[in-house]
Image (cartoon, rainbow, N blue to C red; front, side):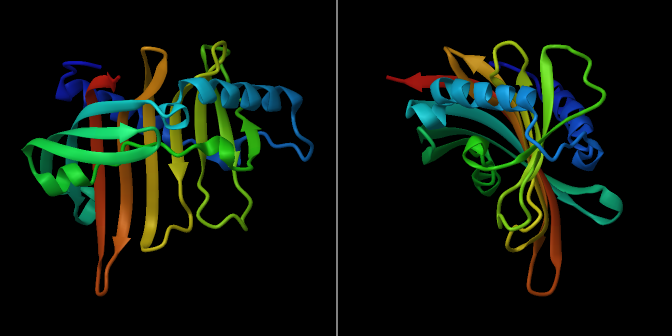
Length: 225
């Protein structure tokens, strides 16, 4: 949380990307709803109603450090901009931003709002390599007719049901050939806030496309009375 080093931010991102590439297609799937999976999904949805700032309507400020990478040939980073900014929210509404240093265009590219996945209908999947630890991974597969709805993977606390990680892949995002968003969460004063966020995409242009990666680490959280 507060005063985290840039090195730690990159460690979190590397570790989470390793989880994010786990294929949903490799999960266990059942035609009938699994009562255990449904129980965890319903419990996590109820927990979100009281701990998700976007659902409770609380006002808050996130201070964040962002790295905006342009990816060149061979998947190598061709250029990087950085920015530190404060982001003001009311519930699930982004109100304003104040750039503290660095590139303002880079600061504007940081999207810190996680979608409310519980409002969507998913086929839920358990993974065969579940270790029984505190984090329970659940695969999310949407109906192919649900245009704009992401597939992905969520990790919840097995005992408290709060969201720990969220990895989303958008197969049909307009203007993109590839688009993924991933979140790591932290608990602060009874709420679940993003701790680090990253976005990877290929944005389509008129004559060419742009590959990029945006990495953001939250350095401070402030709830506004």
